[in-house]
Length: 88
Image 1 (cartoon, helix red, strand yellow):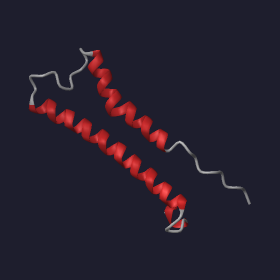
Image 2: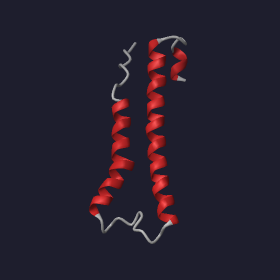
Image 3: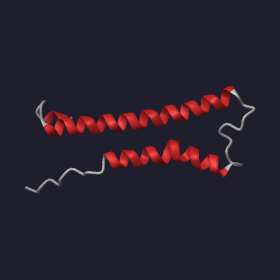
């Protein structure tokens, strides 16, 4: 809905499409990483897998790679707020 205001060849529209693309890529890679870890832990249950409570370094690496870094990247991409509308 928001992109309909911009002409097709405008700079604002291409910037918004680039932002949406970046957020999509970050979220997709975070989901794929988490899904890969879950599948790997289900395939080979003899390894510790996702049971990382006894391994603080592995726990930190898991949450950093699947939660914190993707969230930070999304916040970085969306760091600019649109200007306030003036009251009429």
